[in-house]
Length: 72
Image (cartoon, rainbow, N blue to C red; front, side, top):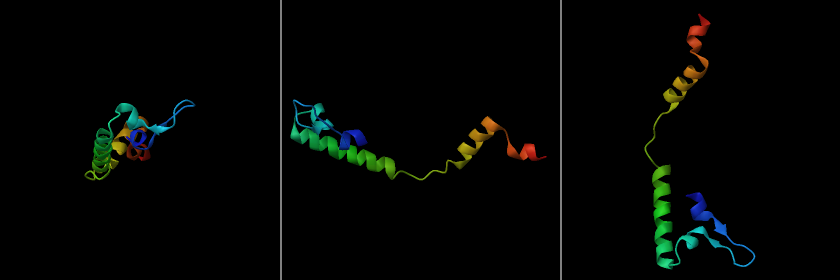
């Protein structure tokens, strides 16, 4: 999404223009795509908080073993 929002492309024969402009030539459709991408990115960033610490702890236990069992 960041690449589509901020990326530009150009070469020696053509001036640089946003990547969304290569998807469509219509200015109105480009604006709609930008708005949808920004809304989608906002929804991903501001989603519900979820605690992933238990998942990563269990993953490390599977990889390296349980540290509480090694102490005893």
